[in-house]
Length: 391
Ligand SMILES: Cc1cc2nc3c(=O)[nH]c(=O)nc-3n(C[C@H](O)[C@H](O)[C@H](O)COP(=O)(O)OP(=O)(O)OC[C@H]3O[C@@H](n4cnc5c(N)ncnc54)[C@H](O)[C@@H]3O)c2cc1C
Image (cartoon, rainbow, N blue to C red; front, side, top):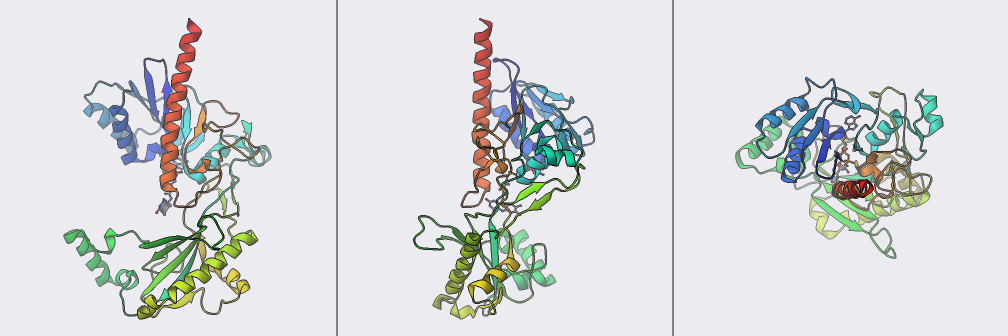
């Protein structure tokens, strides 16, 4: 979403980029804008989205809207889009553009648009708009080490989800009573703990699920089990997002580089040992937990270090690839403006210089809130400058 302003009296709101393919977000954003005092409201759509659901929604909303504001459906694109997928940022003609494609999408789009490491861009035949080597670097994520246990004397999601009868039961429970497994989040138990008591704050999060599976996307196991996940909250490892090609539809290379420092491996090993203590506690005895991943064969630090590599996975918290700062690796400044490129901000999880030590969604929402305040402040300041310059 970009907030642009043609004059001090007529603030202009422009919705763009990631919002385009998010029906609910668009409706909420438009409604929120109506609740403010913006007028007119301009919605920029790409030139080829006439059959796009987004355009239909906008037309419907424009027709239905009877309030004091004017909706301009501007079909003059500031970027090219195919089927709602943004390929590259072409130019910022008026106001500014807010890039909010996430920690994978934002650096990818910047690189496709010529903003990134100059040599890497040239290797892929992309003209360099601005050499910014930090784009796509500094990737951080929370590694989840998924230790898993078989259990007895209880029911877990595994058995319910792996039989047709169980799935029907869960569906009916939800449809008829709005209760049951379909109404719960997967992680039912979480705890923030210190891998070492001398630490000032927790560096591990325990995240426990009443189900087990081999890898994300696989069906759950058929036996009763639970996952006792250990999440590294303050990883030292840094990965990257780089181009594989200049085709905007080709996914970029995502290198997470988990466990690439000795400290991260030591923290993960300490976490697994602590989790084993928890699962061996008297309160757990009635469920007779038996660890099957990494498994009892992994005991020494060296064995565990190898074992956790096998059961480690992302917990889907990528950040840091367009980091805020003023050093050579920084991509945006403290007001989230892209260094060296006028009229372009990045507003998403990619701007975090260092990953937060908790789940990333709420912080990303706050980044959006803070950014919208800064955008409006900058608009007001710019408008005031313009007014004083004319006197
Ligand atoms: C499976 C999963 C579970 C999660 N669970 C939790 C949780 O329990 N708690 C928590 O706090 N966080 C959770 N997260 C993390 C949280 O969702 C993210 O931190 C947050 O959404 C990041 O927001 P963002 O705006 O940076 O990126 P996103 O929310 O990813 O938004 C980026 C948007 O840009 C769009 N986009 C990207 N490229 C293009 C393009 N080229 N053209 C058009 N559109 C494009 C994408 O489709 C997407 O809609 C989870 C994430 C995942 C994936």
